Image 1 (spheres, rainbow, N blue to C red):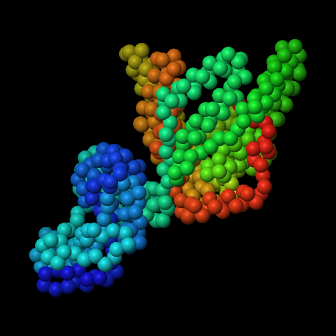
Image 2: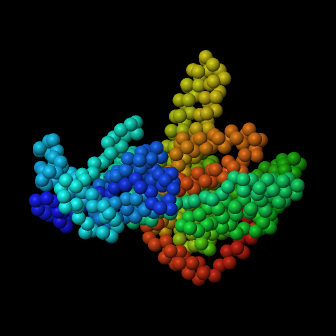
Image 3: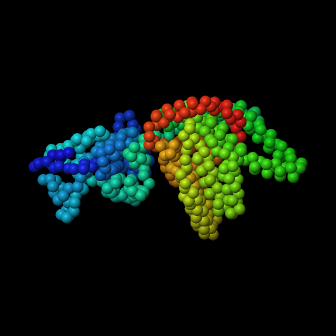
Amino acid sequence: MEIEGSGGDVSVSGVRYNVIVSGTVLDGFEPVQVQQAFARLFKVSEAKAAQIFSKGNVVIKKDVSQDVADKFVRAMERIGAAAHLALHFDLPDNPIPNAPVNSDSNATQSASVTVSPLTSGSASGKADSSAQAMQFEAEPENTGSEQETNNSDGYRADGNSADGNGDATSADHAAEGAKVHPFIFYGNGTEYFRIWIVNVLLTIVTLGIYSAWAKVRNAQYFYGHTEIAESRFAYHAKPLTILKGRLIAVLLFVIYSVASETFPALGAVLAVLFIIALPWIVVRSLRFNMAMTSWRNIRFGFGGDVWPAAIAFILWPLAGVLSFGLLMPLAMYKQQEYIINNTRYGTAGFHFNPCAKDFYMIYVFAFLILLGAGIIAGLVGMVVQPLSVLIMMAVYLYIFAFIAVRSANLKFNNTELRAGDFTFYSDWDDLSYFKLFFVNSLLTLLTLGFYYPWAKVRTANYKAEHLELEAHTDLNGFLSGQAEQVSALGEEMGDVFDVEMGF
């Protein structure tokens, strides 16, 4: 490729590119939504994303091949942000007449020449023939409290290179060939309130019998309003099937209660039998709920065995109790590991990458936060006793959010489908989730529970907004293969599991 400049041509070998976001929003997209999507992709705050779009012509990736650069441009186009490429090359001292010269004569200038519009699929663009018209793009300066690190690998707000040791953002995954499919929730609080209030009233009037129908209606609403890759989930359970399982559970509970009051020894025996049967109940419940869930007409499934369930749900919690709680985080981790590793979509299995240490450290840090807050609250309580109570209440709520956020991110970011062909990206945030949880709890309390439907919808919307599926292979081809394999099995999944032993 040749770049024309006044006084002759400059030949450039091994052409490299910079990717530049112009700040323009493509037709059909809302600026606020585009900035929010950009913030999630690059792990920056929404305020920082707005600043980038306001400033315009910001380099988000430097010194990459055209294939990688084109993928970044397409990733930006998918979220509605206009982007273009610029040639990137190293210039010796003043190689082109009238071009800007670095004040340090010994320095080598790293420059990029804008060749807009040079978009995906175009590699033959040339710079303006006038040397004075060349625009040497500079990356944004580090300003403000939220420091940016701009290096040869691109723009990252967390100080990590997108190609270095830091965690890659979903924009990097998209640029490396993964197509990003965000989860979208279309539920509405007012709409769900009508379903919820009818469920509550009919459950009360029927002495709990309608609860089976209530569960199906709730699940169908939330599954049916959750979308990914332009398709929504579906829940297929029949209320009578659920009612049958619940009647059995109620009958067993009545027998246990009567036996405990009449023959305490028999009650103790029944309690032991229930503990022994617990793994079987867990497996049956998971199999039922997975089999009743589908996406694009392909059912999920669960293939876990009873003995591994006994280890995860009985032996590990028992070890947690005997260790005075020290092993309880590992017990919860083992339960998540058991569930995910035995879940499948069609015939493709999920896999949970080992992260026990990281999971355990969540609870270590939560304990340290609680310990520090307790000391501070104790000191404050010596002066103003009511204030110390408020501090501890706020801390308890924050710790709940802290654990929920980190557990969710760790679970989704370490889960993959079909040997890594499909991965997930979750970016829950401490403060935003704490605010959500605090407002939901407060309004639900003040309204005597009537705000609950809106709280549930807001929580579902938050979870969807902060979760994405990353397809590293063709999604449609994968789905077609799954449909053929499931059809070949000849299973009528709706009739295989006739009882739901839910809790």
